[in-house]
Length: 318
Image 1 (tube, rainbow, N blue to C red):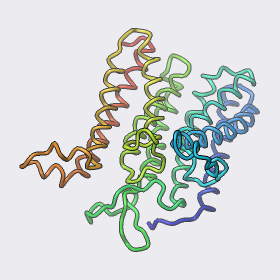
Image 2: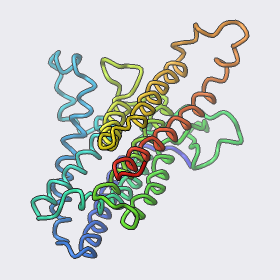
Image 3: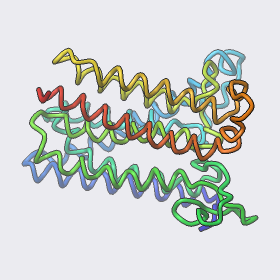
Image 4: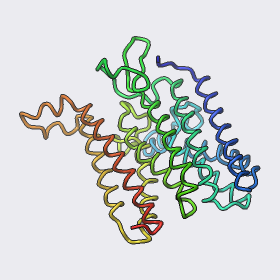
């Protein structure tokens, strides 16, 4: 597979994902004997809030910089790289909740039903990044045995790069497991959506660390992407709400420790802490990409497990 820059492909696939999610959500509402027309309201409100939040999320990276120097072109620019995917997804979910309230449906019930269609949308939206040039691409893959799709994709010169956007898309399909099984296993409304969000957010923090050039970096925290910060905030909100009921804060403490560890390895990968490696530890710098990628994977797994634990605590399971 070869990397391309085809905005038309990206837009069409995004619209297809949007339509598929709305139709599937409508069918799920109807199956639960709820007004299927609420899916139309969710599509309208979700699309509006997704665009607003996605643009606002991106503009946060300029806080204290260009926006305050009189450069407002980025506010109206419709460049795919100038929208926050995580903020957009959060905005769409908020639109689903708001439209459900207006339609007389309990918001958390609606979000539970939207979890699976939302994963389907994320799958197609991430695949759409394949038509947005370098968005969603990680570092160069030099090992010949790793230069295969879907792990890597080649550019027009034959160089292979880590296809992070494909891995993100495939993970969205994996997240259909908690999204679809939750209807039978969850005892509290909203836990299906929360569990699906934990799986998505926990993994996304790791995926963001695999990107060579995260396209949204905060003015104040240039060593991590704004997407990571948004993921961490949303993840911690879910974890804290889950642990608050039983006053068992172990999952929260574990999550904070893992997030701090992820920052440490981000420094390590970017050669910002190389000075601590004394003579005899040169291998740690020579193999920093392999080591950091492995740690990013383990950190994501740990975050998902901690998030799962917080949800079980919320249901009263110790």
